[in-house]
Image (cartoon, rainbow, N blue to C red; front, side, top):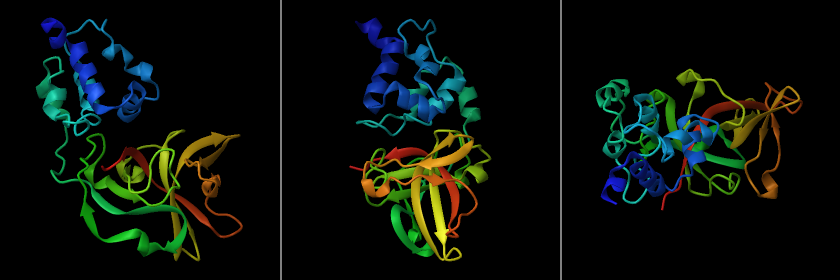
Length: 241
């Protein structure tokens, strides 16, 4: 029993259970589209006694801070195959403070643009994701039920300005969207799932509420002079207790 508890498989499974994340959710947060991409590392048949540096580097962006008690960075590093120094070199020097909360996301509400932003950025307890530049990351708070398939009222969304981070949006990404009208004086801010249908990009709803079932066609403008802009990629949802 003692040897089993010391095994890589046992330690990794325990961290997975503490995080309350499914294998698919962990894979998605690491940047993979399928759970099968990482399944071999979680298998009891994985032949190595440690995980490779590139895998650990991505896992460090997902597990620390989750669970009760919260998973620590050191616990994840302890799963490495001995190349901890290499992992440390790959880790960017990120701020020690939490990612700032800069505003709200509330579909169905047309407001003056400035009212969606907080007067002063509030520091959250969410750590920066090491995969992206710190200056490209921010947090918004969900207001209402327009995203209830993925996030409820009061939940926090960690976002990355994809242009500032130099990353490309992919199909099925969850994105932060703004629609403006009145020459940009009023905006609606929501989150949608980016899909491609018949060669055209569409932004699909992530709500069971019948008020928020509209699909947005991603284009520069429409007949109502309403402009649609993708502001950021949403990379994580946090549900404060």
